[in-house]
Length: 270
Image 1 (cartoon, rainbow, N blue to C red):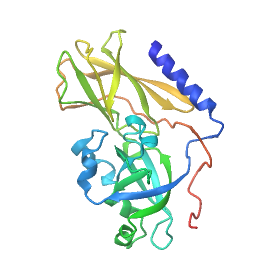
Image 2: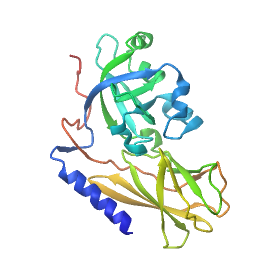
Image 3: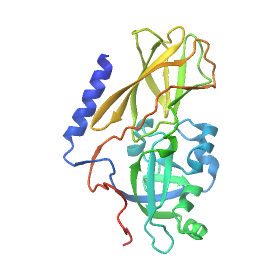
Image 4: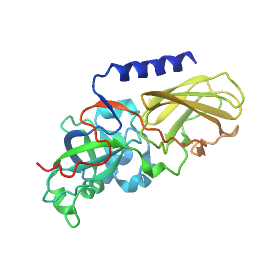
């Protein structure tokens, strides 16, 4: 309980300390490149592996460290559009973060499918010739998951009863999971889990029996508790995905300027 209280207070302090306007749609300017080989994002640092093939119709992205946040942004969605009025559409495309981008020249390196999706109709191959595109982008809710509950996948490295590693999938809304605990169903003896990497959390203090989880999720101006009261059965199996019974739909605020309160501006071409 104490660890979670400290985390929530830290979130509140961080957000209130910002002198910028609180937004749920901050507009950023950057450049975007693309991976020429689709396999590059399947080995991404979020740890999704082959599961990533089915995410967001293959429109995936590797995000810069400031966006990736040590894996907290894994599964986050961003709307990106390029600025070349000859070939770029006004709507752009939505991408899902599945990897970390180490190229400090761009905020994102996206799949070729995502890069082509920024183009006007019939101009997909022309946009690839840019190689590097000037863009603006904003964080948006992951509508792809609006009808899905948060999934908990038991990783193959788990070894009952000494070690448990789980991967979180289908995180909806516009949020980040910043803390996670595990306990036996019906118990109040919670054990803290650590982010191992990307979307994977682990613990060497594995309770007996069926397991419940609780999370702190960024929501509104601070943090919010989510409690999944019965997720893993006592005979949980490595490699299986279990339904948490929770849908995450919150929208986290951030400090930024300018804000986009409703839709994209009519034109971004300069």
